[in-house]
Length: 206
Length: 223
Image (cartoon, rainbow over all chains, first blue to last red; front, side):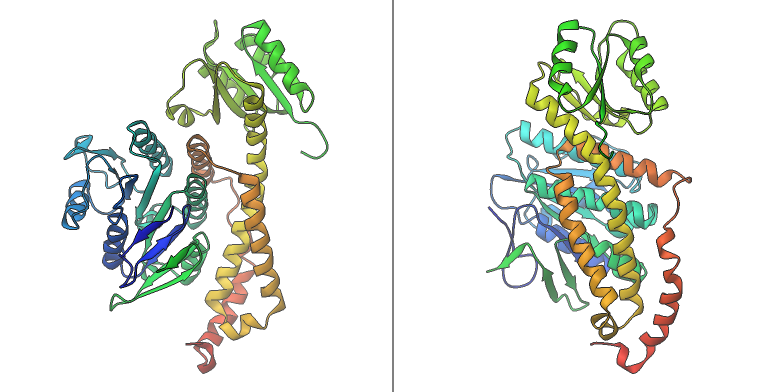
């Protein structure tokens, strides 16, 4: 079963299970798009896990609520902004990491959240967001980030999940952007007017 | 690894289990056995590729033995054998995978196989990154026309595609434990200053320089 979204332009798009999408464009815009796509999980078998490097969990929850897409039993947040706080916000599980450079911590908490949702009977279909790859790149070298993303997208493919990764190409040199791009199945380029250019494989437009 | 059979060390304090595991493994691997921590340390050297380690042995704890094994054979992959399903936290302690008792033959052989494959994967992955980063440098520096007429670039593209397929095969299905273990290793290597920096990008520094000029030329923009 595919992952449908109306968050990428006027026409609905259906992503195949296991696909990883890069959303590229200006920083604020791409983050909003990641929330649009993550929040589009409208079937009861889907959960959403967001790894947030920029927004603290309170803002994350608010962003989901604004979209009418907040479901405490189906959202998990890994807050990498270094803020302290409780282990759940409005009922949704929260994991906290000290830094967006803690890749092992991210993978560990991700694995635990997937496990937790499965144990709770929330199903094994999940949309997984990372907002943003650009921030991760400020804390680690390109090679490490590339290898991390490669293993992460492999995990997403094996699990039949749907990965949504945000990057602002304006923050990096062209070589870095091209290198990171190579990891993903498809890319949605968002221009300054908000128009979306979707290219690559792993999806169908309706 | 070449044609040599990989070596597996079984550390388990129950003799019947040692015997069974060894019998299952013997057809494909060289097998060493140990019934406690100190015996395990006598058996460990750099030839050991995979160790199966019972966490709850009398005497030295599995965690202590693990630390010693990784000290003597840093490339050795270690799977914990345990009666209770462990938390993913064992991965950050240094274990690469785990087996829950009772261990079945198929699961045991599969796990050993996957741990060995992970080394293949890492070798392929290094080449993959080097080539992708080379391609990115060229894409950033040369015009689309230049690249589309370059045989070298076409060959580079082809090899990258081949590697993608090889990597998918080598990696197989990645479960959560493996995922965490691989990220742990990637991060550890990233922090290691002894790791040679991307030597491959150096020879291209010139290319990039040359190309930067052509990018400014009127024909440079395909748009």
